[in-house]
Amino acid sequence: MDVKSEIRDLKRRVGELEGSHGFLSGQVRDVHRALLGFQESVEERFDRVDGRLDRVEGRLDRVEGRLDRMERKFDGLEQKFGGLEQKFDELPRVVAEVIRASSTAGTARPELRSS
Image (cartoon, rainbow, N blue to C red; front, side, top):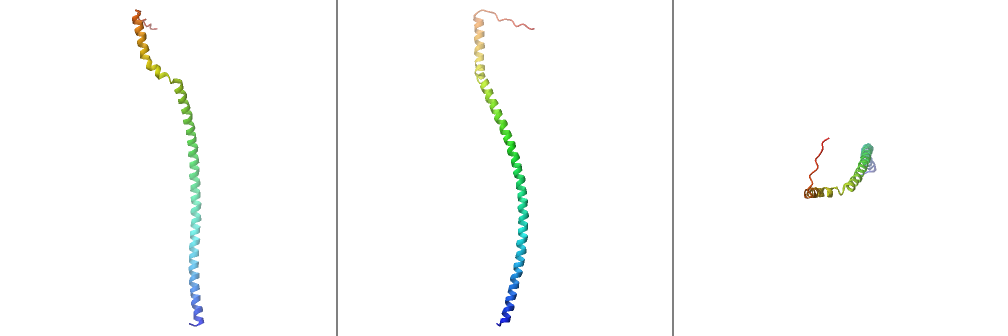
């Protein structure tokens, strides 16, 4: 081959490479723009979801506080009325003793007065 044909062949090959490079550069530029738009969209959605989670967390904190207060109230009621069940269990025995005592003593039952 002579030098002129080699130069023409090299120019043709360089032109093909430049064309491919130009095409690929355009494709990369378009993909980059699309990715930037997608990133912005994802960040906006993430911020909205993060805000919602913050509000839900606040609500859960308030509910947890209410439950803690209710637990304390129930604990107080349990302490206040803890022996009540035992007293109710003893009530039939006490009533029976009173009836037995009144019947053995020979006393009549007092009449109930209506107002």
